Amino acid sequence: MLRPGGILQQWLPMGDAVIQDSVARALQQSFPYVRVFHSLDNRGFHFLASERPIVQRGPQELADRMPERAAQDLIEWGPAASPAQQFPSFSAASCGWTS
Image 1: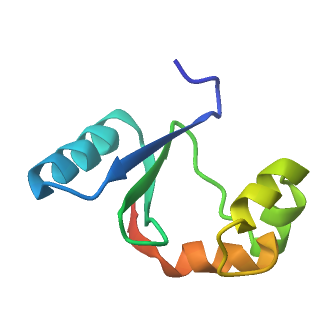
Image 2: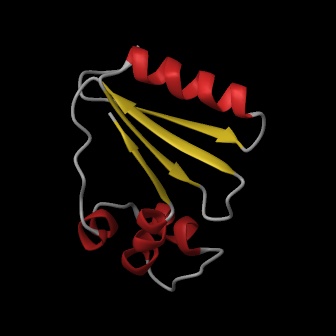
């Protein structure tokens, strides 16, 4: 069970379209707020789901909220040199599907 205001994150590798649709439908039926993003290398999807609205924050605000080790992990493989520069890459990869 999620804590109040918690966000479930689910990675789904690229694969069978029926399975992808089933996962998306199950999350949409289980949570009132769902967002999905393509991975940067287009090898799958990152789903975020919550009982409460998922706040959309700007790249700098997201970067400022990250622990140092998480920020290092985020930029380890690029393409950007800083977390604030890396976050727009995720936005550009967004599938745009929200509920």
